[in-house]
Image 1: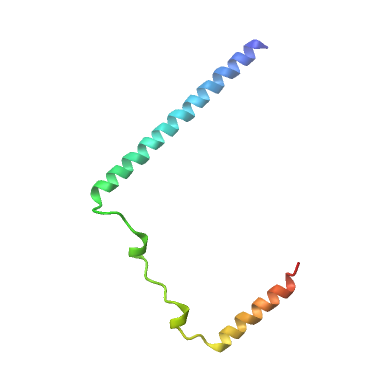
Image 2: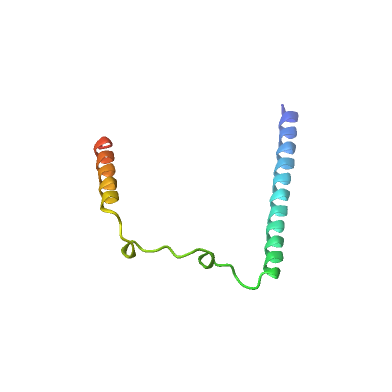
Length: 83
């Protein structure tokens, strides 16, 4: 019985060691890639610089038929899914 427990402990230690080594290598790889990319890029990348601005709803005219259809759909949904 103790032989099985010893073997199980060894297997557990080996498994935990392998997981630890893999995570350490993963951290090293991510940090290396980050440093490599930072070397070739001049400044920080901002997401907002690549995205077009979204026009506000106040600037657009919406068709009254579309508003009526949306209102009707919301009303029907709420009637069907009341608690």
